[in-house]
Every structure is written in C-alpha cells, then in structure tokens.
Image (cartoon, rainbow, N blue to C red; front, side, top):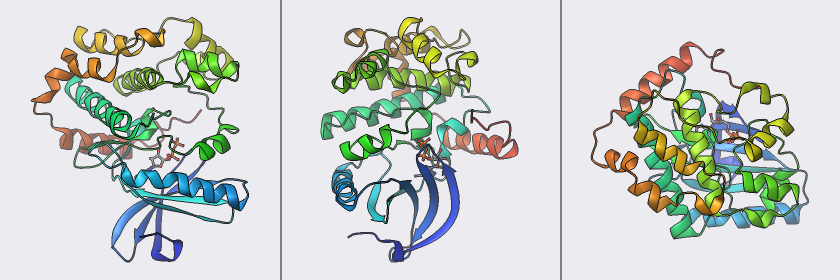
Length: 297
Ligand code: ADP
C-alpha cells in the first residue's frame, strides 16, 4: 500500500538533520507510529518521481539491523520518507553517559551485521555510516538508516553536503577532489564504521577539535594523518578490531567477514549484554543534560 499525508497525524519533532526535519507521526489506518523525514529539494516533478521510484527498493530491505521503510511520497518540492519509529533516537546522542566495552561490542556487531546484510543480500553500499544514522530503541535494538539507494536523491543532496565532521574514508576524499565518484567501495563503509565506533566509545568525534572549524584541515588530517585509535582504557582486542577498520589503504582494510571473526565480535555472540538497561540509562542521561550533549558545531 502507498502512504500519503492525509493518513498521517503529525506529532512532535524528533530532530533536525542536514537536509530536513524528522517528525513523529501516527499512520491512522494501521495505528503504527512512524518517523517521517522531510527533505526539501528544489527539483522538478520528474526528478522527484524518480527519487520516489528509486526509494521503492527499500521495501525489500528488511532485517533485524535495518530501520524498516514504510513508504515515501512528495508534495511540492519536498520528499517525505516514512520509516520505523525508533524510540531511543540516534546513537550520537546516547553516548554521553559512557559505553562499556560489552555494549560497544554489541553495537559494533549489530552495525556489521546490518552492513553485511545490505551488501550481500541487496548489493547496497551504505555510503553514510555515522552515529546519527544508527538508531536505537528501548528494546535495545541497534538499526541502520539513511543508506544510499537513490542516485538521484544523493546527487541532489550532495550540493549542500559540507558537513564539518567527516566520516569519509581517505580514498573517497581523494577521489572526490578529483571528481571521481567511482572510488567508493564497500571498504569505504568499513572506515566510517571504525570512526563511528570510536566516536560512540569516547563520546566525541575522534579527530581533534581544532579541526572542526576548518573543513579543509580536517580532510587533510584524514588523508595525511595517522588514523585515530580507541583509547587505552579499552582492551587490546577492542583496539585491534578498530585498527582493522581504520586502515588507510582500502585494499588492506578488514572485510565484514574478518570483522565478524575477530575475537572482539566473537566474544559478543553468546554474551548476555544488558542493552535494555544501557539504553534506559543513556536516555536518562541525555534527557537530564540536553545542553551539554548538544553536538552542533
Ligand atoms: P542526519 O541528516 O544528521 O543524518 P536525520 O535528518 O536523519 O539526521 O535525523 C535527525 C534526527 O532525527 C536524528 O538525529 C534522530 O535523533 C531523529 N531521527 C531520525 N530518524 C528517526 C527514527 N526513525 N526514529 C526516531 N528518531 C529519528
């Protein structure tokens, strides 16, 4: 069935991203709570229709580590994208109270499983792995969203994408400066995964803050500097896993299979991790100190 605006009751705003606003909505015919993302695009109707058609493949993307897609439609120059409502929000805002290593391993394992599923079963490369695109619910589930399925949508968004905190792999930064988009492979996602896992562990973007104000300096640090590492308070096993993600040469970076067979994630398989408890305390911390956790630059 196709979703349209008249079926939706708009509730509160959940957040603002680079490209638009996310609102909680109720889909009245089914009584399902959803998250609706509004993306403002100055495009003609043919291009908007193309985007809606390209997004349709998302109906096939369903797995335990993937945020479910319910449908998309457009009104005037806005695309509306309806997805599973994740009641704990994104990981970037949940790391404030700290993340113990077993929780970190569970998050990493979920991300790898989701990314591997997208690649193996759907031949989709995510292209935008970062903590804001990892959503959490109070059941303790970790799911990926915002993966690149629509070439037209990506082309339209690219023009405004000048984010300060880059999760792009070195080869991608180099490729883009040569206007060569073909350099993006699945291993570029592995770099972004490693960077995201460090950020989740330490509660801040891993490259030094003096870089924040200068996009060029930051991109130069990613291309020319040493990759960031997980700090010493984490185990050698965890640190070596992250190191395998953040190899600057894409050919030498770990594959998803290697990452899953690494002791850091093998240890997670049969371990009891209190994800429900962690999510509850992370939410309590986030909501008690909203200003301190604001991560805008
Ligand atoms: P960005 O452009 O930074 O990736 P988004 O526009 O995707 O951000 O989302 C903005 C914020 O809205 C997120 O940080 C998150 O807190 C919230 N959000 C996005 N999708 C959902 C969802 N499915 N369920 C609940 N909250 C969401």
